[in-house]
Image 1 (cartoon, one colour):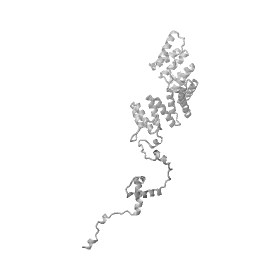
Image 2: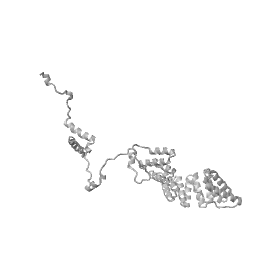
Image 3: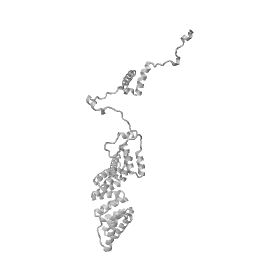
Length: 354
């Protein structure tokens, strides 16, 4: 046999098996196990060859990052309270992380629970539905937005406006109430809430909310305006007149506040002052029928029948379906024909302006 043939290896050198050095294997195996998550599955049955590696990984992890032992529970508590054990949780990708901190509590009247697989801009959806005239759909989308973020100011403001237009006054009141809590220094949401409370006949609550708004912004004439309406609804004439006067002082051209002040003067039978402020209101709001009607009432009470007739005629011309103004105009016409110097008391006054 050729000697050269005897010295030739059975396998080429390029196919020689690579063996990991023991020191390198000790360093790489725990890291690989930790990356694969095997170190967290100590109770899972593993192949026999992996068990020594797993034990070494656990020892290495404990030596590198020691942690304080968790307080142990009594055996009975541990066996009967499975909810105390840590469990993996799925994260809703559609809700921002900040919203999950303030998740809506059970019984939240504003939030509408829902689930979806991706992030959705419910506020933008609501705006589109509102533009299409679908107020109910817009309300639904805004309530879904509040499920994701209970303190979203834009969603709360839009829900207040949209729910009011949809006729759900209670939902609108709740939306403005929460908006007032979120925006703790702003009085606008409280003013809107108080207006809706007054429209619902909840005058005492309207006064309470209005007083809170007054503490936040004592320079806003709308605060005094809504407070005056709440007091007027509760038949507290002195307080109503004071609040309307304060509103007019802050904004002398506030036509609605002037009209309401004149109305309050009529309720207090102070007809001369009523004519004065209602004349100003009619000049500022020449196209508002109820202001003209109130002016007519004040003039009629003072025996100024021609001025009263002109005011009533203006009211009926501006609003042909304004029944009270038409009745007042007909009565003044009959009195003027029967007795040009006669004076009569007018019919009950129309509702106060919003």
